[in-house]
Amino acid sequence: MKIKWTGIIFIALVLLFALLAGLQAAEPMPDTGQTDFYNNSDKIREPPPGGDFHGQDAHYTRNRAYKKLNVNGLELDDNATRWKMVKDKVTGLIWEVKQNNDGVKNYENPHDADNTYSWYDSNPANNGGNVGTSATDTDTEDFINDLNAGTGFCYHTDWRLPTIKELSQLTDSGRDEWPVITVHFFNQTISDDYWSSTSHSYFSDHAWHVYFKYGRVEEDNKSKSHYVRAVRSDR
Image 1 (cartoon, rainbow, N blue to C red):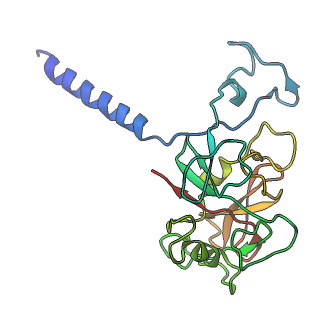
Image 2: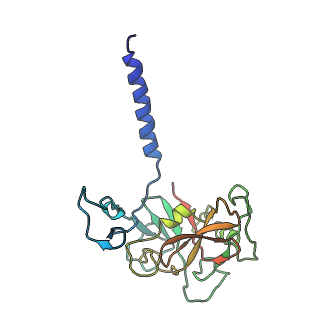
C-alpha cells in the first residue's frame, strides 16, 4: 500500500498548529522569586547541569514586572509614594492597593488593610455549591459590591476576589522577611491569611487562602474572617 505523504504532512501540520495554539493560549506565569537551592534537607550551592538536584525553581528565573497605577490607570514611576492599583504586566492582572494599615478596622472604607471578611458568594456558578457565611457589611460579597458600586473603584466595575492560583502568584519566595510579597508595590499587606474565590473541591464549606506570613496555600471554613485583596483583568 502506498503511503499518502500529503495526508501525513497535512495531519502533522494540523497537530503542529494545535500545539502552537495551545502554547499561545497558556497563561503567563510570573517568577516565584525563589533564589535558593536545596537537597532533600538542606540549603546548598547551585547544582550544576546534569548533577543531582539540578532543575529546581531557582534555575528558571523570569522577571516580575509590576507597575504602580493612579486612579485613571496610568502608569507611575516605581518610586511614586501614592498609587491606587498595581498592574502585573506578566499576567495582565490589576490589583487593589490597601490603605491605613494601622490596626483599626474601618468598613466604611473597603480598601482599609485591617478589614477582615467571612467568605460569601451567592452566585451558584462561583461558590462551589456552598454560599458561605453572610454577614452585614463584613462578608466578601459585600466587599466586592462596595468596590463595584456606582462608577466603580478607579472607574472599573469588574473587581472580584482572585482565584487561589492568581493570589498565590503574589507570593515572593525570595524574601526572607514577612510578609512574603513585593512590599515596594504591596506595602500595606498584613502577614496573615487572605481569601481567594476558590472553594475546596471536596469540603464545599471551605475555601482556599494564602498565608502571606510564609506564603503557604491553605484552606479554612468559609465562616472564618480573613483579609482580602481585589483583582481585575486588563486582558
